[in-house]
Image (tube, rainbow, N blue to C red; front, top):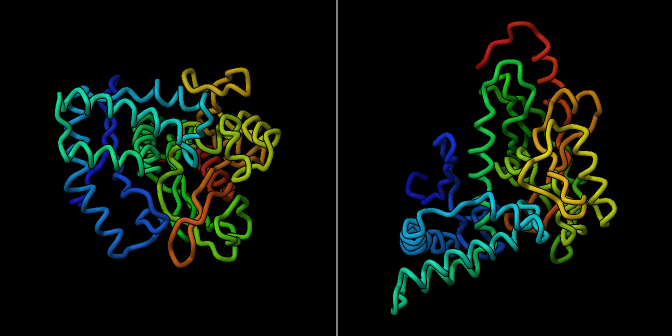
Amino acid sequence: TASMPVVVVRDEATGRRAFCRMNEGADRASLTFGVWDEGVGTRLRHVTEVVSPALAETLDHMGGLPLTPLIRRALSMGDDLHSRHKAAGSLFRAAVLDAVLDLSAHRVEQRHRALASYLRSAEYLFLHVVMAAAKAAADGASHIAGSTLVTAMNLNEKQFGLRVSGLGHRWLTAPLPPESTLRGRLYDGWTTDDLAYVGGESLITETIGLGGMAAAAAMPLQDHSAGTPAEMIRLTELMYDITLREHPEYRIPALAYRGVPCGIDVLRVAETGIVPAIHLGATLRTGGHAGAVLFRPPIEPFQQAARLLSMPDEPFE
């Protein structure tokens, strides 16, 4: 809602900004994973009334926090920046808490303690930060005539959708594959029969080469993703076949610091039949976080985009 606090990321080169709501903290029962109850409401109010003002105060004191160096370092520490961001979260927390100590001088106020407690428990906070960073980056490549670059990916519980630079704001969609096609590791003995798709925009991270695209950087996720270290490496190597560039900053140690595969090209997807690899949170049909999975989106929207871009004078929408 309009009352919810957001993290804001600004591209210093252009001034372009993007935002994402703040995570409500650690609990498998969360709004992120489709739960609304008294506990979720209480945590959201705490974030709105206590945590976000303290974080805003601290970030303002810091003059902001550069994200590219942090993301680059987190990739070298085993994060993919979608399903795993333990390193990024730790780096973010350390930077903020250093500033909190400086800001509070010789007395730590209650709001600072609340912020520190939140940063310890909010495991998925940095996912929301990197989503905003990815959106700011991807928007910089939108609305370029003739461009075959994917600028957004998204899903709800029924459809997968994407946007392509050369097709403007148009969404191209297709039905989701059955939940039985998802592979990964689930908590508490759950199976894919217990799952529903979690609708959301976290796929924007793969749009810029993170998440499943950078699987080879995140060996701790092997059970949640491709299965073995060799398969994680192979998964990322396949992604180079459908992307336009290697990212100059975000690099993968296991691939001799090769840049992550960045810039999904709908023509290459259509020609090769290879779809982007996406690390996705698993959600129970009844609501709640059930683990993590590897999601392979339907190829039809990529094929449709390739056909549309081959037509002369296809207008923006």
